[in-house]
Length: 603
Image (cartoon, rainbow, N blue to C red; front, top):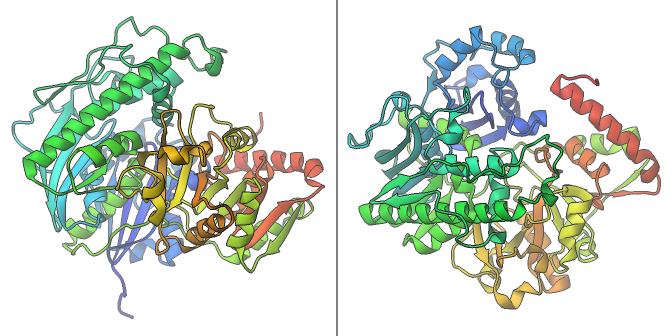
């Protein structure tokens, strides 16, 4: 039988946010991050789970794949794998994964079907290759990319750096499948304790991560830093990023920054006497970041005359900065990759393979990110019928799940909402979401106390009918991926107070019928009951855990938190009187199951 499809597999490997993306004839068939499978946040290590997920969902084997394209920002993948053979690096390849890696056909592969590319090049392909524009420009800004010695694309000779400098910012223009690098901004290596020189590197994304480490004790809490920034006082901290004649200056931190949060110190973050200092510093870092990004975007427009801008890289998850760029940089259209961080590298790798290696044409627009596999009703029944689940819940099939759920939401119930394929990227966009009524300000505290357990300063995001967004929020730009912050119009702030941040903004997701018809119908039903076409939408997980992927994940989260009802496709699951008795047993079961999945044992 002749081969029916062309398959390309893209992989982000070894370090944080390991992921895979499978293309079928240039269309994203499936994509997944390893954390969704292993339940380990920002999972690193080997990549067999994400490959198997995509291949199983498509019903093919690795032999059916025409091309595999990989990236690891630390080192080119072949060199990374060679080092892992003789170095014990548990952060990149833990001991329990070594046997699986050694047996895998892609590990240390010499096949001409396997290609490795550099980091910002992969980010760039993730942005422009699936954008709705035939031509435009690309803006890539992240924490750290490839070494200059490993960068593959041609860039201006004037952008000089040493071989061990790292990518920090990259700017491109594109037309069709052609991509041209216009500028590279490098970070030279800096001294540090052993291998932590990244925290001192003079780059935009690196500075943001440095501030995150200082304030939260974790380099990857950049979203929390963005949420904290509006609480800070203006101009209380000196500039930490400055553009002078187009050159970025990042001064060294000095002993004036002597109030870091030390994880494990016993100090409670929320009541720290350093809070005012942290808030002021967060404001400064966010303001500097916005101003530099806006200046870069304006330079890109003025230099090229382009009307269309596409954005990727971890800094593109800063929705406040994105909002300013969309409104103030002068582009007619701005499109941001929903998996802008390193999970999206898998998309970029796949499209580099399809467009550059296989020389195919662009034909696909990523107008939604629901590219996880759809779980059959048998899996939902299996999750609902386990003994410990069945005796404490009632599961009922609904003939109008949107109408029934809207009534519960209007009655102030918190809903776990599970539909179709999971979203790819860090945002829950309505298929793996917790939903609630935005009309009462206390709903934010209810969500935090019952389920999310997040810091109280962090806002919750709204979903809104796309045709109503301009009535409720300022600005004309669309925001289908919850990556643009908008100001809530004054007349609506008292009507939907639970989604209004302290600065009067909200991280908006616009919902269209053609991209998510079930979520659209739910919003319409809620609007019919309340007159409000908006719902709170936050990710279906608890703090520190990945977003749920399977019906089983959703059921465990439902039964071990204060979620009132769980919707699995058209099945409505409710807790009964036995839940308070049996619930603790389920929580113990979930803990043991997670230990087994991660390869650990009770102490």
